[in-house]
Structure formats: C-alpha cells, structure tokens
Image (cartoon, rainbow, N blue to C red):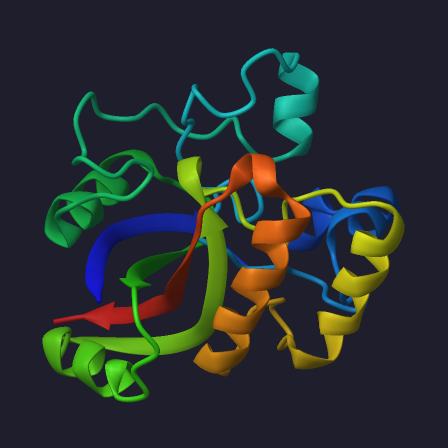
Length: 207
C-alpha cells in the first residue's frame, strides 16, 4: 500500500454533464451510475487543466470531457495529476478556484489483498476526515479499466456482468472483487496491461 497523492476533482453534482448516453454505453458496466468516480482524470475530471490529457482532441471536445480547467503549477509532485502535498494543493485551490464546485480526493495503491488496509489509511490520514469511495482498477497513465476501456464482443458482455458488484460510483467496495476484475481486464485489454488497484477517498475536511 502506498500513497499516490491528492487532487481537486469536479463535484458530483456537475459530473453527469460529462457523460452522455453514448459514452455510458461504451464504457460503463452499470448504466444507472450518474457520476462515475475514478483516479483516472478523464473519468473524473480535475479542476485543473492537465494539458497532456486529450492530446489530439480539439478544444470543444476537451471541454465536453471537462479537461479544460484552471492553469496548473509547473511542479506538483512525481505522480500527476496527483499532488504530493495536500497543504500546497489546498493553498493553490484557494488562490485560483473561484465559483467552481469541487471535492478534494486522495488515492492509495494496493499491491496485495489486505483487508485491514482501510484502517491503516485512516490511521495515516488521521488529521483529515476521509470518506472511502471504493476501489478502482487502473493501468499505466492512470487509465481506468472499469470506466475508461472500450470493449466489444464477448469482452463487452463479460464486462457488463461486473455491474452488480460495482457501487453507485462505479467502483468496487470489496477489494477481492477488484483483484478478480484486474485479472479479467488484463486479458480483455492486454494493450494497457498491467493494471493495479487503487482506493479512492474524498477528503471531507482538513484541520
């Protein structure tokens, strides 16, 4: 288990606007999810403009996906779009973000199935109040295997069967289900393998 960092993501109330029916049908196993969450900033947009996302897309389409946010500092840490320092992120957001609805998030990478990881993370982050949102299954460049890999044929049909295990934000509540899905998506989208497990948390407040 290791910390990935922090980010400021678009609020749940705004997210459905980035997901039309065509996009839902292409990427989501649960069609009734109104606002998928993810470590993947294409699935769950940051309030910042990470210019390396959507390279080759025109400005209108980047706006449609929520990728044209506030200007970003030159250095935020080794794991963009995640900031290494929550305090720096919070300070910068207070300077530049005005009138935008957002939440702070943090993420952790899980290498093994450890049922007590949740308690460990809460202990590490004890100065902040964290709300666990679920587990994401993610490839390199933070591409979500759950919500950002288009499938077809038998693979798409198999992907749909995972919908009953996903929560209202299209994440797994059970880490064992996440690891099982990791094996499925590794075979289904071999060009993006390997995949890893990340837990997603909302930072409700900081002291």
